[in-house]
Amino acid sequence: MNTREKILDKSLDLFSEDGYSDVSLEKIACAVGIKAPSIYKHFKSKKDIYDSLLATAICKVDQRLEGIDKYVVNKGQSNRLDIPRLSIDIFEYLLHDNYVSRIRKMISIEMYKNPHAMQFYVEKFIENPIAKHEEFIRNLGIKEDYDVKVLATIFYSPILLAVKLYDADPTKEDELVDLLNKSYKRLENIRR
Image 1 (spheres, rainbow, N blue to C red):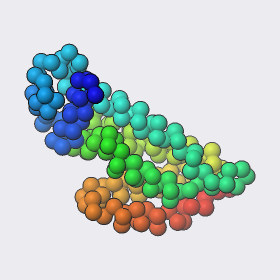
Image 2 (cartoon, one colour):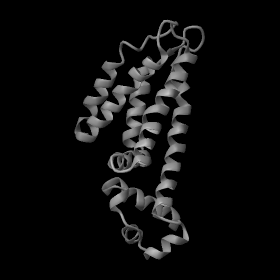
Image 3 (cartoon, helix red, strand yellow):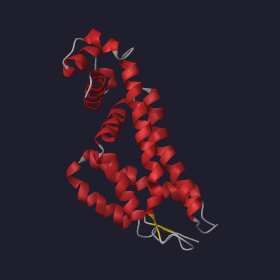
Image 4 (cartoon, helix red, strand yellow):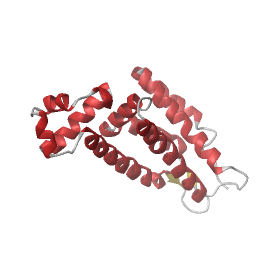
């Protein structure tokens, strides 16, 4: 890991524990094992570090959403979405991907202090996933009397709730996975 990568990694650790607002460049430099002015060889400012972290997170989340078609079973005329498997995979990704999990925690701390963080959270963790699921459900071919946006929102909401419940008590992960499984049983056979 080069110095730039160390700065990003340690910054993300600190931002996800203390929030962006409460971390100084000196604290980042100390965690990396360099002097604070050395950070300027790699980044213009603390905000530049923050923006770099968010840009990487956007790429990671977008790449993950692009792989959603692997959850279609019985490809052909009777396409069906494996909703329980998809929901649990998204849930576990948000919890256990080391980078995305720390970004999520950082944004959760900052979103009530910083309008940009709130906008990022809403866009990247709510609106974009719902829009991607909307597009996927539409392409899957469902009954025309279903409101696709409502279906996508119904699908994604329990995942967000489970993530927040996990944040409150990480020992309940297995219970939350079971809850997600049960929550999606009725949606499992949505098709034309």
